[in-house]
Image (cartoon, rainbow, N blue to C red; front, top):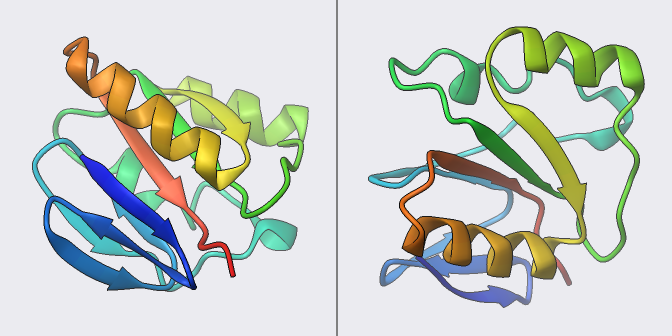
Length: 113
């Protein structure tokens, strides 16, 4: 669960992460290639390459929402998940709700502040 966010990082299941992170139900990984201006399927490889590809990929865009280009949205959907972009706070809250519902979800999160 995402317990806190802000000040350039996150607290996820008791562990502090600095910078961008990808959160899965059973683990989190640093996301060193996070750049929304050049977002691609290759940058999301940690999500798309897992054995149990999530049905939903939340994209936490920082303080404001950034639209995902239709072509990229289609490429990601062809590999499994529906991508849903929103500000990072909303992505953290949505991730936690979907987790409690038992959904197969991952969140690629950019820090705020």
